[in-house]
Length: 251
Ligand code: PEP
Image 1 (cartoon, rainbow, N blue to C red):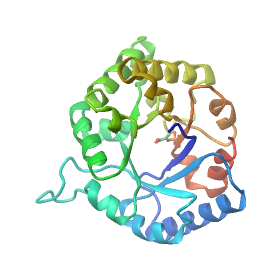
Image 2 (image 1 turned 180 degrees about the vertical axis):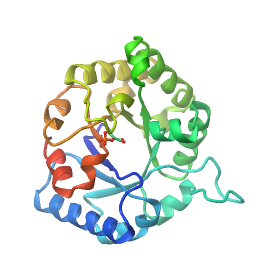
Image 3 (image 1 turned 120 degrees about the vertical axis):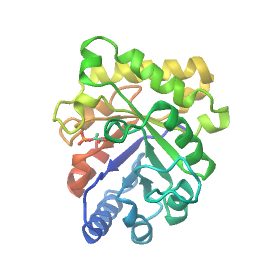
Image 4 (image 1 turned 60 degrees about the horizontal axis):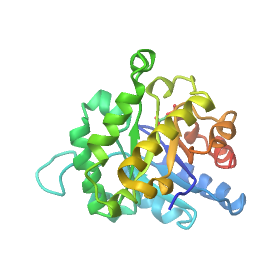
């Protein structure tokens, strides 16, 4: 089902106690702001997930891992499996974030395995796509995004596809303060939905497609107002409970 979603990606930030306190504050502010037609997700470091699952209002706040392994279990030192995330209380997992692609060499081929592994263990993938600046300037952004979608999602069956959330994150807008214009965001989101519809039919109308890249309280409303934008994946502004709440309230 197509939902409005605001997901905070905490990345490599917050000590254990800072993270628990932030989650409690977000949960409190979300509860105080009353019922909204938006699902709220926090994506803390792995070590915080189990405790956050205990201290937040689980009806209002969902939890995402920031990555998962291609493997289920075994001798893979340093990895976190989809099953471990799920057993600790995660509902979602962010996959294909541009920082994972750029700094850890994650390829579309690898991400295809991770997406399937997440689905196998009941996690909803938030699958990130997006072009770097040179690709946009060369007019190649649609080709890049098409490949990221086709190679990672197009061999899923209809049931698995129906669970996927997409995040369009132009890499040039992540953490840079440069935000895509509402028209640029809508153009790419529509392109993504049309491409998904060509492959999966009407089910693509139910896919939540989030925008990510310097989304802040001051620009969220105009970005979320677009027909094919169903919310945001938020980095920097997700680390301040009040800013995060203001973005949630942009719906
Ligand atoms: C992100 O990393 O997913 C992101 C969107 O970051 P920021 O909001 O800080 O640009």
